[in-house]
Amino acid sequence: MAVCARLCGVGPSRGCRRRQQRRGPAETAAADSEPDTDPEEERIEAGAAALSGALGGRGAGPQSPPRCSLLELPPELLVEIFASLPGTDLPSLAQVCTKFRRILHTDTIWRRRCREEYGVCENLRKLDITGVSCRDVYAKRINPRVKSGRFMKILPDYEHMEYRDVYTCLLHRYRHILGLWQPDIGPYGGLLNVVVDGLFIIGWMYLPPHDPHVDDPMRFKPLFRVHLMERKSATVECMYGHRGPHNGHIQIVKKDEFSTKCNQTDHHRMSGGRQEEFRTWLREEWGRTLEDIFHEHMQELILMKFIYTSQYDNCLTYRRIYLPPSHPDDLIRPGLFKGTYGSHGLEIVMLSFHGKRARGTKITGDPNIPAGQQTVEIDLMHRIQLPDVESLRNFNELSRIVLEVREQVRQEQQQQENGLEDGEGRGRQSPREPQRGPAQPIVEPPAEKVGAPGDGEAAAAAAPAPEQPAHSGQGQPFVLPVGVSSRNEDYPRTCRMCFYGTGLIAGHGFTSPERTPGVFILFDEDRFGFIWLELKSFSLYSRVQATFRNAEAPSPQAFEEMLKNIQSLTS
Image (cartoon, rainbow, N blue to C red; front, top):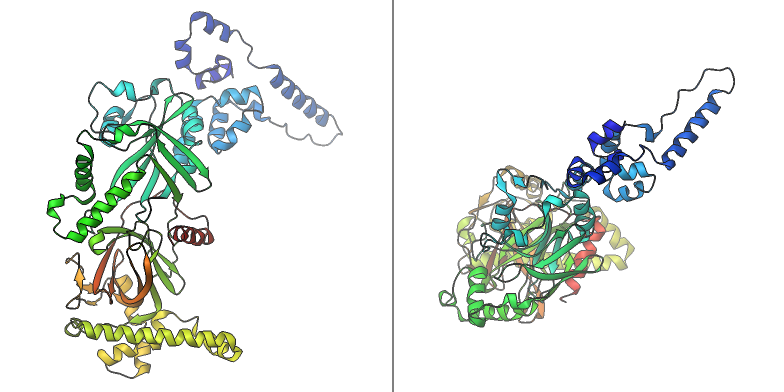
């Protein structure tokens, strides 16, 4: 057993062969002279042997099979068993006996826990990822401006680092900040994704593509990172600015909330002063210069955002957000979308389904409608049948259809309120509740007056049929009415279905907010639009094609509570 233990890196050698190579001859001889077992292990094994002997001497019946103690298993088998346990249970296991404590020093156990629990695939010894050295990976992903020759000063000493230290001092300690977060930047909000990236924990700020290219992929930049510079100490570095990583601090305020602080804000300043900082920010945020923006109101909004967000470059608070849960009967898969919002540019919206309604909640916002508010709400019980393309070009015709549906919704709400006071009225309302939206005959009268002729029974029978294109990819022609403005003219020319909805509009500073009628247009699984009747404006939304870990809500109730919390912060 001692030979097997030495091969595994445990037992009397008290460490792997790499450690023995660093020891002197005197230390190695002292380690080899220690006994194979300690008194505690001998006492446990002696007690187990005495107990088995006492049981074996009773009666003349058949002897029970000898019991095998966990201590008698080969070390390589114990390593495999311990590596399958959660990392949070291993410290308690180390307190059982000295043998277990020795085995838990095997780096293979902690390497597997890092890989299975946090997705770490970095090799601390070889430092190679698909033929690219770790130093090159650092230079390309974290700090592309760093020059050669400085790597040894800013990279950790991986050669003398163990996975046990990575797990206990880095991953487990900062596990509570992994996932999706919304920074508290006033009305603008944001989307932060904290992930384990190699041997770093990095906070990536996700930014929408440049306006109005809503179908382009998301942009992202690092705000902070956490890694081990020494074996037992994790280092937090701020990545904001253009002068490389510098000293920072992370404080976990409470559950689902943490804050970051920069201790060297001079790294955020540029030699050219605020004007150079503004020009650099404008190129990164909008992909253009101020001279390229001819709209005076848009220039004011951009300058206002720069001045406001610059106040938060040294300290930020983040609140956890969850991705919406999905159900098989959802219209489309919920998630995050990029949407056009006129002079405010592109913003991130979370689409979620709540029974008979769908909601679009702003993750990033603007001075009119801040982050956290419900920008659109879709009534899935009232589907709208659009007219033919020629009639659809007439804005008045579309407006008449939508206003008729709004009147139906108002009457139904009034009847429902009366039914709550009258038991008989409530009984008349209940049979209609289990029906799906497309099966409601009340949705079809606007379509009968504009488009297809036929009685109400035929329209109701044909109502479920249009739901098939939501999965088959077929649809009807679509064109924006004349007079409706759109930031992106490259919108889809076919749609699957439309529903009545309301959009939230307000004055500057979220003054006098009100919900106005509109049309929700479903184009495909990854794109939808919304026509704001009162504004005569069209917003196009495209799905964020990114995978987020540690972003699932523990329960539907937790997701609903999260929506209420982020909305209350800006109400």
